[in-house]
Amino acid sequence: MKSHHVFFAHAVGAPSQEISASCGALKNLLSEKFARAGKEGKVAITSGKDDFALNFKGSWDDWTKSIARRKDSITLEREYDLIILVSRFVGKATSMIIAEAVLVGMPVFLWQDGALSRITQVRTDDPEDWQGGFDLHPGDPP
Image (cartoon, rainbow, N blue to C red; front, side, top):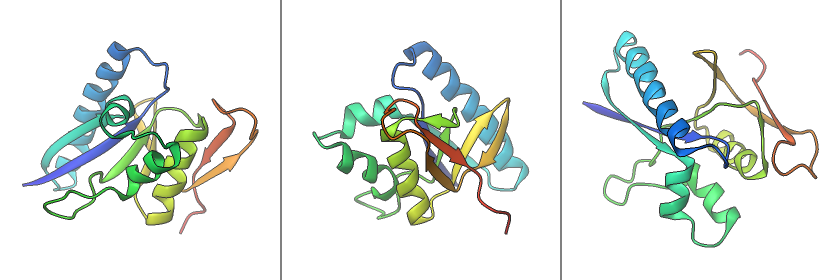
């Protein structure tokens, strides 16, 4: 049975209870979606806060790039299968994570009002606004 590992990008200041509640709701949503698509399997959600605590080694650039590129040492599969965000306007670190994910072809979704929308672009609205100056956009339809 396939495992689906999701990186959950949230605001840095989000309370732990809110993050936990969102992870639970997201896990339920994705489990249902995968089951309907015939892709049943375990869904694991890792919050940005938890990944940061485990993997940040002093360099923002290294950590943000590692989210999309990090591989399991045994299977050599990517650690994360997709990234999900809860806000269209993000800070510098999240924009770097998303830009790297898009570059390597990792799926990125915006989760709002119970729906998921694919994100394929990050635009800089205000490079001086490190907390919300970057705007996520869907790509052009194929």
